[in-house]
Figure 1: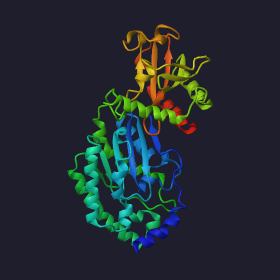
Figure 2: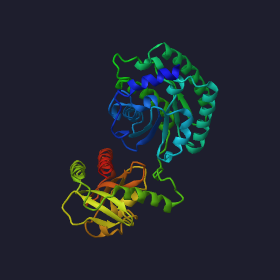
Figure 3: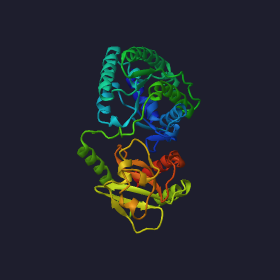
Figure 4: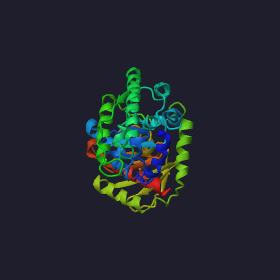
Length: 393
């Protein structure tokens, strides 16, 4: 009976708004934390049309306000995702890219009255698998929300599902209590919206605060090393570079195809960061393709020993206050010759799957203190440029 009831409601669900933009959101700040939201239910974004007003946006902003760092939150969600499918699906994703994981599952299990023994088995499998594939990083398992707080399920049958959800949540909390890297985060008792929009931004903000609070203890003590944790094969540089180059090839860019939107971003970067030149680079094999904010015939330079090649190997941005005093770059042709770079600041640009494509950077012909550049602003502009590269390819 529950399954038949749920099948009929799917017609109503098809009319409820969902986000249609890129499934990620960012909050400003340095040394950003990267979080993946995975699952169904609240992760889907029912009731809003942009992820900035759904769980990713509110979680990014909540984390940033708590940690004082930036936050990049991505989401992989589907309304029909089940717990037994979670680990195989997660194993197809590049979990090495993320600092933390939030899993939102269980509404479907509550509505289908799935067996408690099966839930315990599948949750144990998921937590054990993540202890291996996501070792040392925090995982938050969100509790199942109150079913009758969802308008389409606010009925007698929804009450039956609610009681079952309570039993499932109890099992999950017990399993998380003994897991090495998992925390159970019970969801608040959300109010049922007055209209049929399913969920409101206020609901997502409330859920995000709970999730951020659960993540905070682990992220607060995280030490962000200068090396790049997003390169999946640290002991196999050839393989890592092959995957990076494949992502560049997927852009299908030529030297002249960066577009006017990139030019506007470069102009803003040059002006706002008070730099002599702003440049977007794409590292293609052994060369750097360039888009420069000033008039120049220079469209590419060698990659080897370059500032941008060093930047893509770091977690976040890189600043070189005086290239002549830095043993990595003092002999670089662009330092000892035209354009005589002395100061450099850059931030990596990534593909949708995490490979480093290139950088957004600024440079000057005079040295500058490292704290003389707004790296938070540079990161924000890099994220805009990154989005433009993805959408134009």
